[in-house]
Length: 234
Image (cartoon, one colour):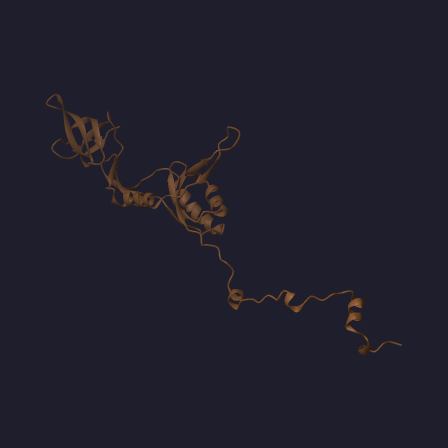
């Protein structure tokens, strides 16, 4: 016959269960979450900033690299991080052999392309793997051992550097390029010395002028001429 519940004392419970209950105030209280903390969004990463980087490319391939990289950025899904590709240029003029002039764009830094981008592994790979790209301009991480060249770490251009580059491109006066050098033979096609032949002794592209030795009255005389007044003789 089982004892009634009333017949079991507190001491009997302690013996039967083998437990000694701690006082209520010794128990750890249940954690209470602050609603403001519980509802707070997770910490977000700081947005990466796009910077300008100089990229060295093969000679005369600046435009080709720009067009190819713009297309590859879209194909590789990094066009939101490769934002601008620029070839700083200034207006110029080229004098042809027949004396006519052709408008051209003169590169401020031949062999380099400027890229404004968020630098990460994907964007670096997109740039480096573009045909005719040599490498970023930056600091070389020397290898601990061996004589092999280290890895180039891209160095972002400072605001002052970027400002100077684009200011130079905007303010530089047009330069006349002419396929002439000292010793070339010319024919004067206009002006008081028209139909005289001579030899170039000095070329000044910024002034669009040259000096030539013309035979006047049997004597070689230095004469300053405009590029538009002469044609080059083969």
